[in-house]
Image (cartoon, rainbow, N blue to C red; front, side, top):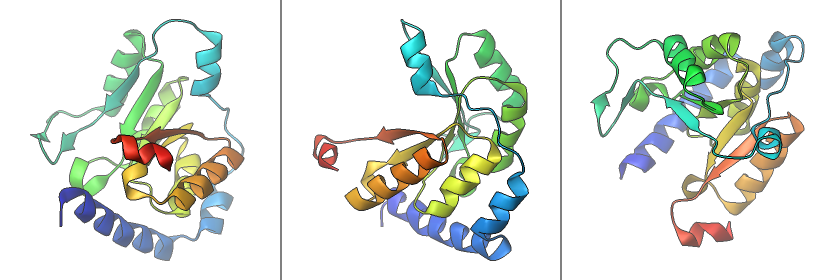
Length: 175
């Protein structure tokens, strides 16, 4: 089993555990009022030039610990001052030492679009993303079927989330 397969297997367990703690309905109820939307794709239409998606990541399986003194809010502020268009936050806990709380913290201090970067394999995670304050989600073509991509995209758009689709190989374009 390669690393990506291990991550997906673990993610299925994490999502199942999260569902046992809170149902999708409970998540929605707890989310409260609608948050202002910060659309990356609207920003693309408004501003010409380069747009930077700047990533907040504490660790990775290949590099190990990247930031020992990890402060997602400080890093987001630095990115904001450096001209970021989007703040991408890795929320995978086991392999990247991220957390959904990092996204929530950053959302409170920036008005830029915030991207939840994770291994999204279940609609529950899309609701989680919205409730946490994300404006965008990442879908990874390699781990999803063509049907899942369509369903997840439509669900995200219904929740007013932008979708960024990661494609690693040309054959994935057909999805």
